[in-house]
Length: 243
Image (tube, rainbow, N blue to C red):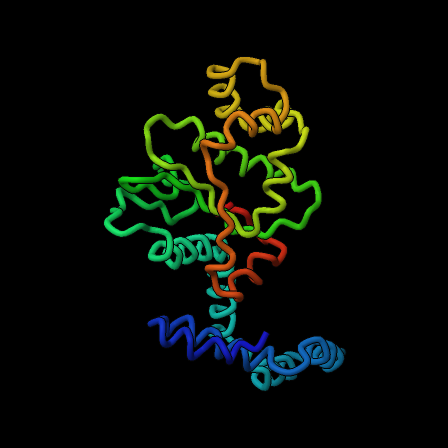
């Protein structure tokens, strides 16, 4: 990554301390970082205290650089939450109908005490800004089933939407024969509610989806989002707090 390219954007967003951290890291990590570290390792062989201090000075290794690296790591650890929040905010003007008003929106990790990511006077909705890869993806399947279930079982006349990036893989999962038992065993609260409503008659994901497919609309919103966000969503996750 070229850290220097981030700095003007961070300044524009009013984040000078983070921009300064980026600038410090760019000085250290610019060029071929692997070569630089290898060269530093070589220079440290048989080095004295004085040589270590001199080398650190030439590399700008000091307290400010360490603090900058720690600050960027802290922010990077929340990137899924940031993408989730920004994605919802960016989409709202494109999704809301004329005259539709928001009752609440949940932008943080999970629903922060609210039932859904979005509720208006006309709809309830959940957002999943993850790019499926087509493998087993059990954790993602469990998570999206939970969202679908709560949307489908909510009482009231409002429209229900599950907004996703590319509906192909989610729909393939919902039409599958995966045993509900394997999902509900990992979601005890959902399991209790599911059995209270449906008992043990429904055993497959596909069976439940057929029952509720006209209740919840699964909508692909990838065409409404910037390509950069789609690319970020496709990267291997370091955390899954916003999923």
